[in-house]
Length: 405
Length: 148
Image 1: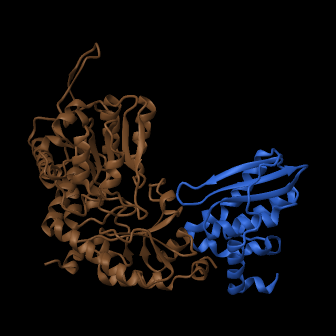
Image 2: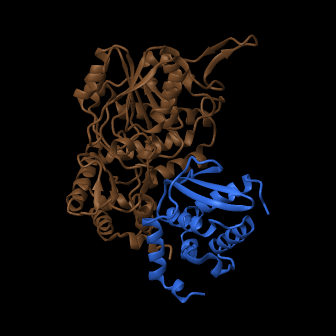
Image 3: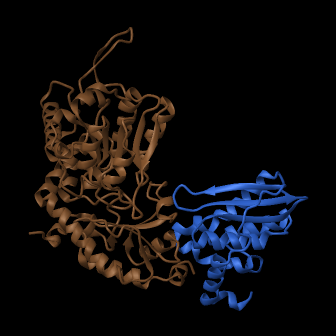
């Protein structure tokens, strides 16, 4: 049984603050258990991992390893395939620099979409610039969805990498990642999946999806900021290079400049990691699993259809992703610039985002330079949806301007 | 001081009018114009302000780009106020505009319709919007080397 009122009690930000938070696609609130875990590390553990032959360090290292096991289990991977990073952006950059730059060559094609987040496209621009590969885009439908038919049309044996999110951060569609992966593999390409907006919101199984790399951030799934994951198929992780070197990543080095790197995943983890972040992420995963990822997915879909049902009768609202099933609604209020509208929502106690949401090339597709984005998570309620819809119905340009008069 | 300019309904009308029918909203390739590209890292606004400054005078000033209501209206008001002014007059008006935005004392008569922006200081996150075009012209005056 999904008890949202009980869930809300777990979140200090919900208990301590008035207002309605509809920006969870940017970052989520943290439950008390995650905050406690972070605090517990500094209060009761306090030392480094993998260093020092003393009990405390051993305990921290053990907890850290267990966190890696936990993350692996959560996405259906094995522990050695889990690289801890600072977040999805670093994870995606690591693939582009460590794999793309090493293995792609002139004439190769990277296939992506126009709804991609900057973090899964800019690193590939850079790779192209350096190795002479090119980026091509899977044509999306008018609503911004990626279809298998469209994907098949642009898939050739020149394509070596398919880089795409399985849930777009602007449009919230769940892309058919399993089928895409299957077709990519048949054509000899690997799939780099940006999971920042999917791993927190739906059941994830890298074996079933078949993706070669998967990147996600802890802070978008009730975990701490500054920590994230790169999952990589082990043979690929072994083959690719780290793009940072230093303490922790090497087994030994000598005065002549010979370096022997550790095996993956450790060769990618230079320096002291965000220990409290990793431990906190592991507790966040436990928390999500206790609620159940399928329950979370279903509840978000329910919230979304509840909102859409009411919004469809609002003549002043333009919705860009009517068919999406996750908690993201991309929209505009007709005749009101997104930022002005966002200010008005804010004056009514509703936090949502205006802008191009780090997907700057999408604007050509949806013909709107800026949009509003309301994003729901499992701690939002139908009452909050009602309040949101009410503001959507009431908002006028005059009211937006009155805020500054 | 014109009493009308304290009436909220009138102020709102002024902002609406400058937003829906912005003055001098166009860009030019003509000779003698310099361009300031004003883009904000933190918000959506991304405009270009152009001015032709000659013999200590702003002969022409115009702008265009992606901009919210407040940026569009405040920049439109700026172009209307400063077009044709000497640099000295323009600087005086600009000083008073920024004084108003900072909630310091200012000469209302000098700012004319732009006093519709006096309430922006209530919304700290919109101050950037109300000053983006004004900062554009400040930059262009500075670059023209004419500080008189």
